[in-house]
Image (cartoon, rainbow, N blue to C red; front, side, top):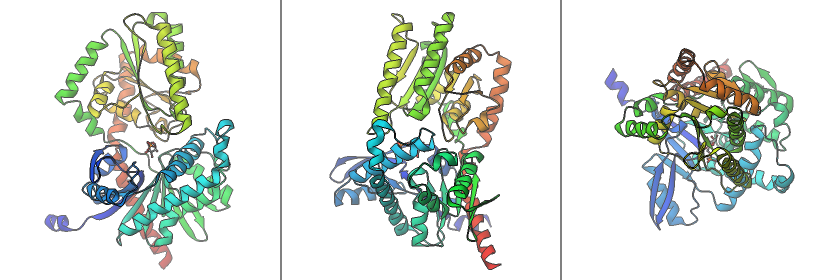
Length: 489
Ligand code: G6P
């Protein structure tokens, strides 16, 4: 029976996301170097054995010529990746424009473009058109590779128009859509000029998922208040058709982090870091350099802490890893300058000839270096102004089983709903509160640290990314079976 089971073909899962988990760099006319990034989604699906996943997305590179497109498609096929080719103008209007200058800030409660961003508001319609065009291009590629019985799982705010395009191709396609950011209050969503079109398009999916119950509730409210549809305990109903809406909190592949800590190179790295920062408590921030992450506010809170606690000045260091992102968007360029200026000022103010209070890196670290850093950290600062979930908080907890460090966590990160009991929750806008929490965390007795850590560790190691992906996909299968039964009745 076991042998028979093994021979059964696995159900195919087409994972559609803006970016492929592989980035490509051109080495010659027909040669490509591929770099795999094992992000949350990739490790989630690596652990799911029932499905055979294929990825469809943008390779993050402009390939105008046919030879290049053909050779890159072949190279990616080995990694089970299928590229969508977007030209520079579409990327500019769809990715830099509509996705990252309109939807991203809006969904994180930073509002629609104002003042100097007004120029973008004027080109709103052309950006929305490019967004629809790009989504249609994704749909074309999905349709080309779709086989009957496949499950299509669309991801994130880049692809809100995709469920509608896919169902227009084939109304029987099983389509799920998951949002990795917050979905804002309906009062925020209603300011978006294309609010109704986007909601209707998402509702074409069979299952719509969010990280938290609150985001799901906001989405249902937006559909009832803006579209006048009916919200039910299961989702949203439109003329007898139910779209299931539910919360599926994502996790991490915690074993991968725990196992990495045993590796000799990680142990060596831990030893080096311990020697380097001996006699000082280590505080850590790991963020993409994005305005939603609250990096300036965090650093200002640290400055306030140093200002008011002179005896800690040479006993604590803040390591801030700020990974550059979306560097073509002007708001991100301004943020980089702002952060550099604040860090420089504080280091000038509190540094000595041999030490500085803040080590700021504008780059990412490799996986092993990151694990070592998490392991030697005494206090992690995750102070996003808004965040869909924030998996840095999970990664830190997974690497802390021997140290039992403290997590300071923004109440506006989705993770606050799962790690809230173990973390110190803060309002990141309140610099006085964050500064006081730093003091509390640094002075926390060992038994309280242990109790808090154990709570979080239990959550992080049981609610994994694999469990998340399995739950979403099996719920999507069930949703479709239920819908078919309802039609037959
Ligand atoms: C967020 C989004 C993801 C996105 C990631 C990196 O986490 O929810 O969809 O992939 O940021 O952003 P980037 O614009 O570099 O792909």
